[in-house]
Image: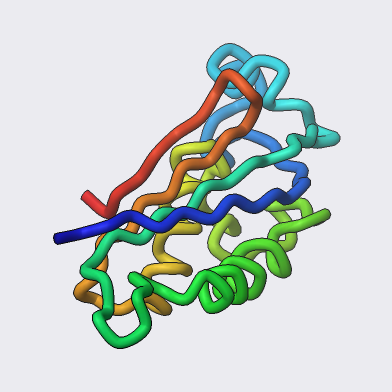
Length: 136
């Protein structure tokens, strides 16, 4: 029997969608207002879900306090009130689209979660726009 435990979190961050190898016109055509040279921000919402067997000793799949601490250390502290392009090393050469951000977050959390457990991360860039990554 497997159960999924989820925890939500929140962070605010700025970013600019662009490719250094494209000229300004192409970047503007593809990324539109998200290509603003002065950046733009989002109030990101995050849901981290861990699926696994219930530990018969504790009754937990994962201690929610441990999951909270992992999210704080791996996502909120390094991303909150940051410019993703400039302040988060993973985005030095990676366009910080919602798709790329969710994969970076998943990788940061994955290394802290027991490999026997499944991990899914959903990132809301706006209330209507969100992406999900399961490591596939």
